[in-house]
Amino acid sequence: MKSELGGIKNWIASGVTAAAFALSLPAAASDLTVLTSGAYKQVVAAMAPQFEASSGNKIILQNDTAGGIARRIEGGAAFDVVIMTPDLIAQQVAAQKVSAASVVNLARVGIGAMVLAGAPLPDISTVARFKQAVLNARSIAYIDPAAGGSSGIYMAQLFRQWGIADDIAPKTVKVQGGYVADHLLNNEATLGFQQISEILAVKGVTLIGPLPAEIQNFTTYTAAISAASKQAVAAQALLRLLASPETARVLQEKGMEGIKP
Image (cartoon, rainbow, N blue to C red):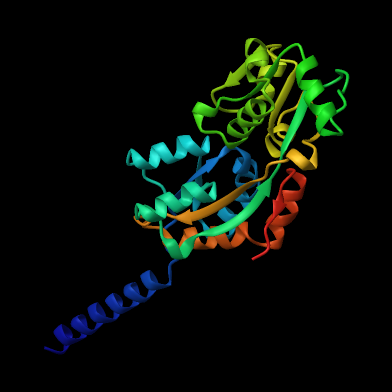
């Protein structure tokens, strides 16, 4: 009888020890899917190693135009964090696709002009000179507005406002997504426009400079957590990192500006 009781006590003790050990183990690492529009992709990629090392979670980074991301979400794409323009985030809040309480503005970036590395730099220091540079260029490239890229939407609107859209249409390359710089590298265009951070990300092209202040257009990048995310705690930790001083230094390197709360 004593031996039976001793066996039961040992079994109970070993069970308690195993349970305590299990509770002491760190939570299993998991994937965190981040949907981001092009201009902010470089920032998330730069901060991902720090986040993964501190949290144990792995970032799965998916990139598209802001409009493309919105269409993915509407189509039922699974994600944990989304980063795009404030108006599109507001639409996702209204559709209850993201948590309203999680929304945070992360950064903003202006549009720049570029040429191939080594090519003469046109003068874009004033609105008049910028407009003349567009008219003088052999060919120009920017994101196709229909693809949903904010820089392309703005440039097309600007050219229509100036009344030159029809004149430059034959020499315009409308890029469906990705880097406009790639279309300068393959000689499809000689002058390109995109967010400054996306110009700086490509070797082989030179940033002439930002658009003149009077016509500059800033795109704000806003983040939110999916209402259906099963990794909400990890997602919130990522947003805290992206809003931190460490990320502010990366933003500057990438040609973007942080946004103070």
